[in-house]
Structures are given as structure tokens and as C-alpha cells.
Image 1 (cartoon, one colour):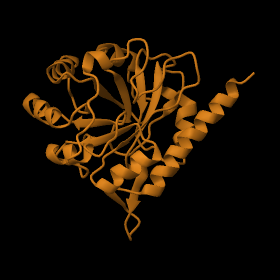
Image 2: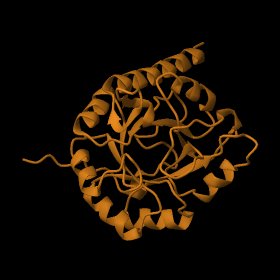
Image 3: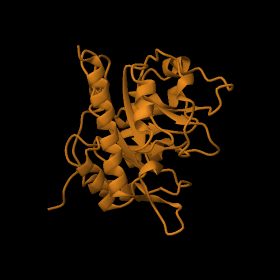
Length: 264
């Protein structure tokens, strides 16, 4: 019997006005367990490795120009491997509404992630049609001198389940670059997902820099857990199980340090 993808709550039921979605983190009043998304997966063994390591969400890139692109049908095949409470996330860049709906119909319980030039109205309409929650990527300039009003951006996209923070680079879909975390405002009215150039070595620093600046803080990694070829270059879309395990361990270590800092 073919395994079916888990069915999660629809968009309105899974939006977190007072607490967070399982893929994002827990609300205030206790030490958070940082939620982890592994993105850009293309192979069964990488999905299995991410789940085994403790990932909370798995991202599939449906942007044809990305080297990590998978077709919607392939994303559906891979998503069928996910157990309950591990959320599939479908990444779109300026996609047509009909394509978003078709892909969403193939992957039960998926969250939508918009990474292009989609307007608040575009995102809200797509989420409503698909009955799914959505994340909106904010492309943060890597130089602090370039202004970006994240508070305004979050308010403009107030129907988003979360705002994903990524570096502004040429092209779309994420570039594996970090931005200056210190430039972000201290109080952002949104659940935040830190992305962009994260690795097992720096994710703890990112969490320490941004924890408490939003309603919750999650992390999203892609290139930082990819395998390397014989020439030392990353094999885009091919993950390294050991790097995934080390990334998750680094997040958990940062959580423990934070918990320790709150102890009396």
C-alpha cells in the first residue's frame, strides 16, 4: 500500500495568532525548542536523513531556475515519506496561481513559501485558494547601509504564518549568503525564520543574535548541509547526512545554552 502524506490543518486553523505552528516554535512563557527546516531536498535518502536528525519541516523548491528544483509530482513523492508532524514546505518564485494550486493539491498538508516579488494580496489570495498557511521571504540587504524596513514588511504581510529572513542576492530562491544580523530591529511583529548562509558552525550565533526579536524564531538551512564534490564545490540539491546531524545538534546546543542562561 502506498504511504500517504500526512494531513495537517488548513490555513486558518494552523495560523498562530497566539502561539506558533509546530514548524515554527512554541509561544512565550517557556524556553523555546527551535524548529528546524531543511530545504532544497531532491532525494529520498536526504529526506530520511533530515527526518531522522529531527527536522520539523522539509522544503521542496518548485522554482524551475533553481539547481535544487523538483517538479511538483516529485515533491509529492518525497513528501509521502514524511511522518506526522513533519511539515512539507513548497517554495515558489513568482509562480502562476494555477501552478501554485496544482502543486498544493499534490502535497497534502504543505505550507506555501513565497520567495519572489509576490505582493501581500497575491500571497493571501493563494493561501486562501489552497487553504494553506504561507511564509513570505524577506530579502535583507547584506550591507547595513542599505535600508530595509522589516517591521513594515511584517505588517504588510500580516496574514503570513512567518517571515523568512534571507540575504538579498542576485536572482531568487536563496543564495546561501548571510546578512548582518545585528541590523534587524528588536521587535518584529511576526514569527521569524532565519535563513541565508547558515551552517553547523554559525547557526548558534544566529540564534543568539536574533532570539527574542520576533514572536518566535526558527531556522532554515539548505546549502549549509549540502555534500561536497571531489573538487570541494557543493553539490546543490544533494545533502550530507552528517552535516544535517551536526546542524541539528548545533541548534539543540544553542537551545540548551539559552535555557541555562534563564536558570536562577
